[in-house]
Image 1 (tube, rainbow, N blue to C red):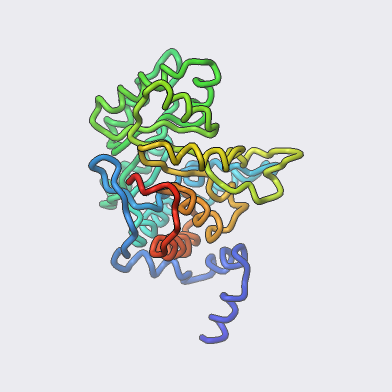
Image 2: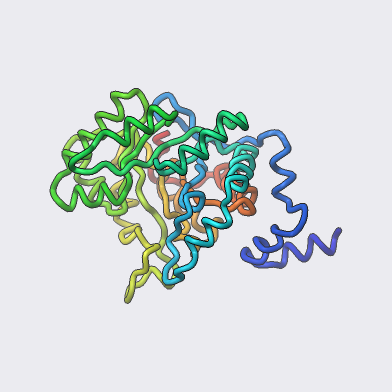
Length: 305
């Protein structure tokens, strides 16, 4: 047993992931034990774990730089049963919320998870309204059990680029009229800046944040996993923003170790982090988040949730 423990301790993050695929991985035991506590905050009247389960992996999509097979690999790995196992592990670690895109695949998975397995994860739905149809996906997400809805970051970027920030305000107002928490997503800081200027009042922002301390972040060439081009400017501006902030892309699509990425996000003002996790990463990620949140992080931005 001591030898086995030493072997695991000395392996890399990737090697531990492979070892977890052996019979009786450590994660399997976690799903059967009582849920552990995870620090939480509140967005309006909704209690949300500060570590949130992300949905790109489960939806079969990943920012894979120039590796063209990765999304297809995820689709094969995350069978329905594997998604359920992952949700069970997440819940066992005290994570009570998942952010998942609104689509037919997600609805099918959630219907099985909630109704057939008695799952309790809350769903914040990512929707992609268009200029012609702002409301349909919002209504469908709410009708299918979403606790909250937010406008996807690419949509936020595009509306602001076109000078149509008012569309974000109209979509947000419709979300809030449905009595669920409503948010605005952004890869570019300009989205948050323009919303604040326009007096738009989301219940939360979904805004990218990572240190860009990895090769594919540039500066010569930026690959598709960056989405945090101005971290320093984001940190400074978000100090002035009063509503809660959910940070995403905190690991640069797997390029930054969670010990570094989680600390950077929480120290620099994020109230929550949304992280895509394989089943074999859940327990380690949760332990890292708990340990960090038990410390005095010396935040310049006070907790907004």
